[in-house]
Length: 122
Image (tube, rainbow, N blue to C red):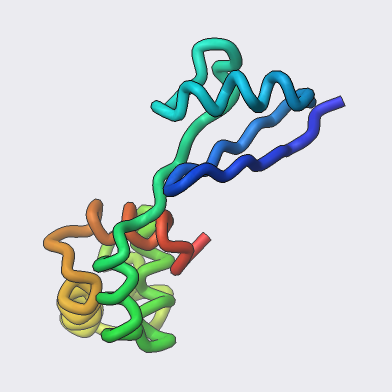
């Protein structure tokens, strides 16, 4: 039976896709460095820094910016986003500049990583 279990320690969260007992959890807590050597299905995800949380709180994204960010995370191009939202490519570029400024990032990859780690998008 596959289960999903989550353990949290400091800034790390481990998601495990198999049943495990408390002794296995204690063993995994000794190795919070990414993929567990004992259980390669366990992956550690690090949350964002407190100053990044503050940046997001001080500069909230609009509903449209969140929509564009979600499409960026999904890997869509500016043209595809523009066509889907019935907007001009220039408008999408403006939204992206605003998103980058508000998140304090310089490119799509950084924005995607921050959006996923912070939970701004799924």
